[in-house]
Length: 459
Image (cartoon, rainbow, N blue to C red; front, side, top):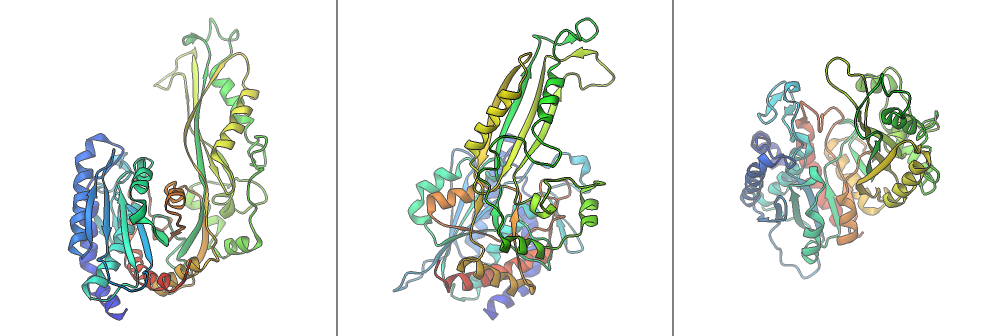
């Protein structure tokens, strides 16, 4: 291991430059004008994997290509552990451009931060794992396991091609565990293993009123206003205590154990700092739970977008013909997206007045995910984190959703270890995204230790 550690230290500057090369690709999967950039980025990644000693190829899909790379085969009389490392090379759209201090695809280093779209989500995080493997291969240090990298180009648009890819390659991808670094940690002094993710259910409500926008002076008062009806309907979906007011919504929610609440208490948190970070005067959430629990371990109903009527300059005195809202629910174990959507539909139909016509469009959904934080694999990951960061790691739940981890479980039969390297202020999905270079280097070290630790335990 010492040769691996020395190699990582000696090549730190080059690794940072290679990360700069990686983030220069405007690999925006959501925008068709970047299709060529997506292919170019995937091609760069394949060549990079080959240069560090992996076998690598580009796998076409119905959408953007997937990069598949493997460590060289090792002859062994006994079965070697096999782990899969997942990442994604696509990034979020960078708009609005005017809020970036420097162009989003021109990397800028300030202190120990690298600013660029995709720096932390997810190029820096997946490159850290590749650099760790490079250190093994270039120093002829034997890896105690076989590794396969799957780096896709559609994570930011729902991983549409990944499930079919996993099914088609099920035999060669079957593994003992999946490692994903696409989450975060509270601070560099609190490296984290994320053991649970919230699921999601999305839908859209449209209330239709009159056949056209009406003059509010001539017709107002004789016809229901869809915008007003929608506002009144939405107000009934949450009570004053922050609980979702849908019958049966909490029936399947798995309660937090005393052990989990103790782990939450270990996380760094100061309410004044949190309020300042969010830019709010006062917090609001479901009573009986701390803000950390509210945002990661409790289900929610959020309005994501709300529109109706005239939105231009000045006034336009109308009764709008329609009103629309986009809503997402974040779900926790053991809630089912399909069951929750059914409950929501039933409540909306009950609340909707007969003076308007309601249309409900269901969107994407994903189940929540949880693994045992006390499993031998989780404990091995915690040891690797401590060895790299020099601090006692924490266990945490993440409020977001990563749907593909459920595909790994269902298709490959493997649990996922979520070992995020991003910090809370890395601005993922926002202007001025960055990645802390200390997290980049320590992430490489964590990955190097991880394969030793995981290979010594049986799942």
